[in-house]
Length: 89
Image (cartoon, rainbow, N blue to C red; front, side):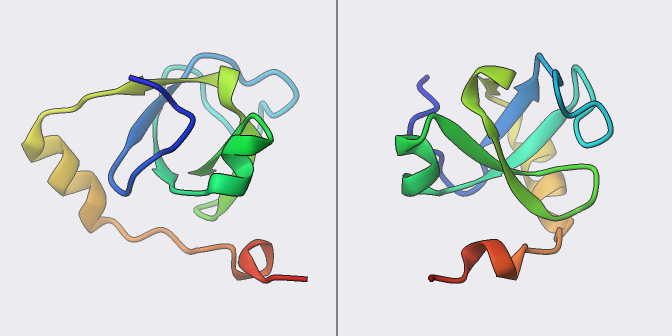
């Protein structure tokens, strides 16, 4: 599985929080948000500990397949979207 393009409902396991220890917990599953621009920059957009989505280096994560029951439960929780980051200049 590649991380270059994430789809809704994709989960990533944090394997490094270098430079972001307050925002990312090691070995925790994070929900990703599709973002083609981030992918071109070598990043992924995930909902972090603040509950909002931010860009992080893709090498901080490994894509994970989770059981359907877990996926549905995690998708029910609605994190806040970082609207300022999504605004176009």
